[in-house]
Image (cartoon, rainbow, N blue to C red; front, side, top):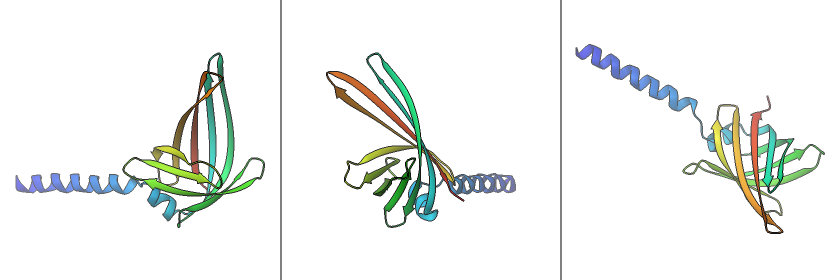
Length: 140
């Protein structure tokens, strides 16, 4: 009986270690895997009598010190700072000379992440909602 109980707890502990080792928070993944990532952005904008989608891509380089750079589809290069809030599962990107953008980290894998940001703008008394989904994968 004790032997079976010990085996049961050993299996549970092993599974727990396995599951926790597979889920890496972006602060660890981005720092550990610091380097180039490919980002595919999907934009969905809705408003009164308006519904549009668009997409773009960029190559992003994360550096351990919380800085980085990206090259967009038009070969424009920009720099940014980044930080991650593990408690909120959010990553904040602050492009040089621009306002911060806060993404909810919605999926985390060893070499891939998905971020989502939703914002609203009021233009001529009309409210428009933009949802950006960024799918990042590690450049190997």
